[in-house]
Image 1 (cartoon, rainbow, N blue to C red):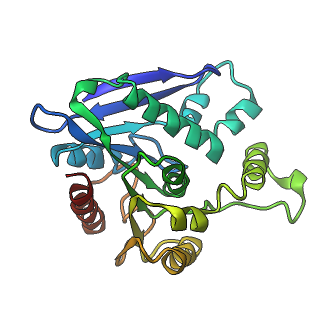
Image 2 (image 1 turned 60 degrees about the vertical axis):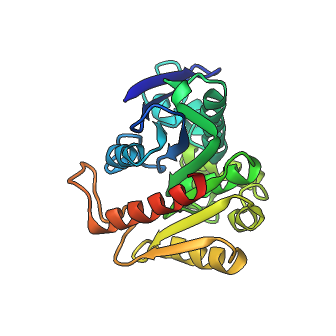
Length: 259
């Protein structure tokens, strides 16, 4: 495992890790995006990253810049809130992809950026749908329990929302067309696998049903008995049958798409 740190223009940064597969030649790449309440070391991510690498992929995991914002001394409350928007999440992933393409990630000679997949969980799964729609170089997309995040609205009074909620709502409203996940998914030419736990929250199950209806050309897989985190917890207590199932289906798909 090799660590990296990518400085950003506003003083924040992206911290991440590269895990290498066995062998010596360039390997297909998988970029991993954690959920809104998670981070690269949250619960199952270190194990999943390791399993992907062992299976033959140059695997990149990283923290979105909102993680750095939590401990950065010079950032304002509004700056921290803006770092937590979906727009910023997409910018962060763009920076990781650019660094990969420019050969700035560790042991770049072991990566084959022409064979590229992205995998996201929860809100990042939804964001990755948008990202793949905007980046044709993404050949394969895997979404784990992903979609639009739960959010309070301003129906009962905008002032009652916290500043982060206000900023995120503004971002959603200003990018309503861009963040239309069903439309973005329908337009995707990349190979797509959407894995959904059937015991997840109702809003995501309903969105998954809309995905299936509006974009039937993609692959969908339901993990029976699985909640939003495939029945794992943080602190991590080890894998579960549900997580193992999601990983196995993911690996089969990625090997099929990327070789």
